[in-house]
Length: 343
Image (cartoon, rainbow, N blue to C red):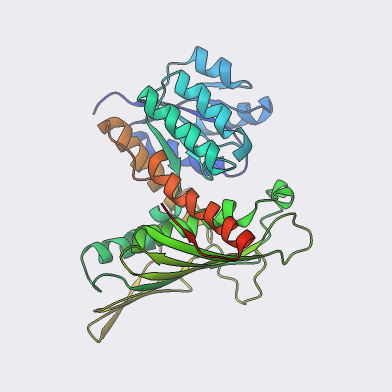
């Protein structure tokens, strides 16, 4: 095996634990957790001790100057992404940045442009498309199992208390479309292709939140397919299937249905079969988070392989801008009351 890739992680908060577990688990695939950093030195020190990082820092500039890193994983608040990515690009270190890519499309475009000009790998940790059931659905679609998809519904609705571990979300004025909408919009692109135009309606259903917590979108895809994409953090359905995304896709030869409990039903030319769409339970994961946790590890594995091979990631900065542009178009549609054409 080639020499391990020396990985530095910036941010040691709530969600990054999944990244750190993944990096440790991917040691056999060439990941070496070299350094961790957080503005709270106690968090950085605890992460280093828990996950076996060689060094820890309370300052990103110090880490980048002191360590010879092959890859940096930025898992910090979205408003810090442009500054942090700018530092790693200037240091010419391949970089992964947690979704959402930036606070707005302009920030994402600036980061992508800087990385391209410097010839530096930059990818977004957009992990929903790496969830086990969606990799299976993607494989079925690519094999032409139901023909060219013509219609889809993609839905993530929950009342799970996400604010307990991420209270700052209550203050986000641009909320669910940026936090969760990018995930489901990315799936729509993955399954039905690029979008011709989009219309959207948003709602603020929980009075505690500053921004929208529910969004419903209608997409016309360039291949003539249509998808209905919706997400909510204030759903009323019981049982709550958090953190599952429910999917239904139709094509001329049949349909694919991902039901609660990650049960996959595939109908091809009048014959229906069932299979388990669940993700494997990793030794560090726990239900019901396991489907997300496994996808984080799968995403990290994909990034490692891409960096080692010198190729772009599936969710490169350039690709993720197309997903982010859909979220921005949804905001514009809500403001103007019209369908927004996508360039």
